[in-house]
Structure formats: structure tokens, C-alpha cells
Length: 267
Image 1 (spheres, rainbow, N blue to C red):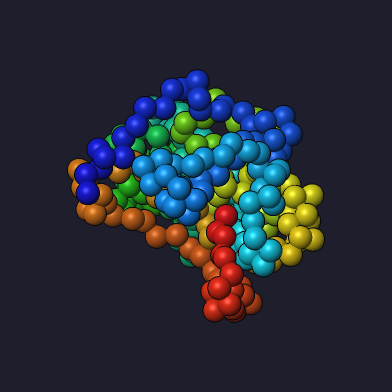
Image 2: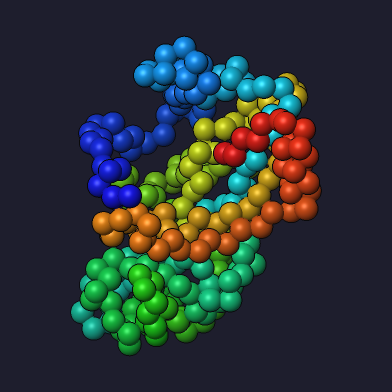
């Protein structure tokens, strides 16, 4: 399958640079696959709606599975000791693969701006006088070692929200809330699992009240979400690993829903 088969034009004016004023005031495109195939095989039946009206399209007994990963303020800026140039670092994960707010390490996997110029042995000064040195490389990642361990306490004070590349602006204070789901719990993602951004607590409550079952997984969004597909054939693209956990409770709920013929909706 050719990568070019997936190309399409998307005008920059159609790429939102800010979320709607109120969370949940987002549009929802609904595809009726069964109805389209039966009535008009050559046409796709679409309905334009709003996320807040999602309940209209769900069957009672549907199991919805949400990702409770929380975005880490993982973007920090360092000044190169040799040249004085400011370099952007996106910390992906500690080498110890710790997760959650207790993840503290002196060595981190990272992506950098101007990556080809950031060589092993180069050192940088980060906020609060913290020094870091690139000590290794693995594919698109750099291994950076700091002169003391750092974690989310440091990043909360000095880091920036890792907004995706298609948002052409610097992060703002409001992004700490809006580029995070309302149910985010386990710190570890380098980007937000964005499908969940549109859900509000009232919407979640209304889903539960209407007989929609809700369960949780934790999947930390990592390097793969930032990297382009550089090969001509999709099958040759190497997918990067992401850390995840599925509880026994969630696994049992999914298996039960499938056995009973109920729909499972992954968000």
C-alpha cells in the first residue's frame, strides 16, 4: 500500500489553533455504515452533529473505553554551551521507564529541534541552572543525561505543554487545562490522546446515567505521534512502542461485552 494513497489537501484555515471557548462545543461527524450499505451502496450517509449529543447515537449497554493518561509538561529549552543557540527538547520518557508523577531520573529519552546538529557530547544549560549532556542516540531519539535527577516537579515549574506541530503558536497558560482531558490521571504522555479532549464531566455523567458502561486503560502517547511516515510503502514504516496497561477489571468488561454482543467503543 502506497503512502501517497493517504495524501489529501487540508487548508490551514481548517486547522484550529485554539479549542472552542467551552469544552465540548465541538462538531461530531457520524457515519452510518450499515444504513449506507443497505440503502445506497455507492454513497456514504453522514450526519453532522455535536459531541455533546453523542448519546443520541449510542446503544444502551455500549461499553466505552477511555485513556486516562495525563500529558507531561515535557517540552523544555536548553542553551547550547558551545554556541549559545536555544534548542528545544521534548522529553519522552525516563530511561528507567517509570510512569506517573513519581517518575524521576537523570537520564531521559528525548527529541530535539535541529536534531542533526545535536551531537553526542554536546551540553546545554536548562532553567534553574540544570546542565544536560547528550550521551547517546537511538534512531530519532537522543539520550540526554542531566547533572541531577528531574521529574514532574521540575517540569511543572519549567516545562511547556507539548502542543502538536500543526498548532503554530507557543503554549499558553490555558493549555495546561485545555490540552488535557478532564479525566487525565496517570502522568506519562508526550502528547494528548486528543479524542478525549471533547468530553466534559456532565457528558460522562449523562452517559453513565443512560446505561453506557465506562472503563479505563492507560496508554502513554509517545514518539510515534510526532514522526512522519518517511517510506513509500506503509508496510515498511516502523511503529514505535508505547507504554500501556489494561487492568483485569477493564479486560473482563471488554470480554463480557463482546461475548454478550454489545458494542465496545474506544475513545
